[in-house]
Length: 348
Ligand SMILES: Nc1nc2c(ncn2[C@@H]2O[C@H](COP(=O)(O)OP(=O)(O)OP(=O)(O)O)[C@@H](O)[C@H]2O)c(=O)[nH]1
Ligand SMILES: [Zn+2]
Image (tube, rainbow, N blue to C red):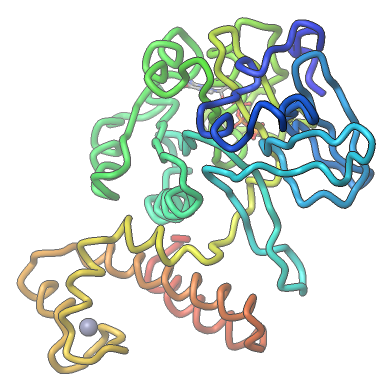
């Protein structure tokens, strides 16, 4: 547990991010019998959950993840009821298994952090944005280190081409800017999370938003590039202004899983065009009557964006099908995705 947590006695549900959405799911009788607690940590040995004046360890066996709200069954904690989530980030479990792993629940806003340096990569941002939309949270792209780049605004303009649905904020993570520029999303009762590669400034942003003691940050290895992995076990921060930050290490290597809806939202314009292709299974390569190719030829849409869309759709299809039991061999997967990546350069 992070040491910026106030003593449990002083904790209120509001400070933990309790919202109307959860209150509506429980009756007064429910509350009397089983107080709400929020999962702040997940370990092999079980969960940790905090509530008003409560700090409980719950043995393994509850299907809950960081950010979940539960009604604590005091006698049999594993029988605690998990409340409906308004958002859920999940991923395909690493390794050979095809299970879905729950990463974090009930996040309102995901800040997708990138720096205005070589790390910047539109395809990666798209992938995070699709995942966030799929999860049911609001994606906001935060571009740090504008001071280390000649033309941060030009980069931001590229990020803005991703989708009308995704706002882009450029700021120096080290000063007052985060508090001011992210205030719209970091309101009391809101839960936010930061996604992004190591060294882009996630801890610096949390520190800038926080009144409490600093989280350790380390200088990046290069003046302008990737830092070391400095975020440790702290998983939930309560900021001075009443906003909750979920900080989960599991968010780093995210694969797209079942993000068809999120992709459809992010690439709504392309999906709509694809609906006009002559063939329903059109691959938009050289099929007759392909509306995507026609729009490309007419210069109406951006070829790179179309390629990135295809990569994400291919990856999502692969992950979703393998989760539902279709056996792909690794070679088949690698070839499909590598072909497309090769055409994109380093994307992905
Ligand atoms: N010049 C400049 N440096 C920044 C900015 N934001 C962050 N940094 C520096 O970048 C380095 C890495 O920042 P962190 O906040 O530790 O990055 P992180 O994303 O939390 O990294 P991990 O914990 O490894 O995931 C630190 O030295 C920060 O001071 C910025 O806007 N401008
Ligand atoms: Zn087509």
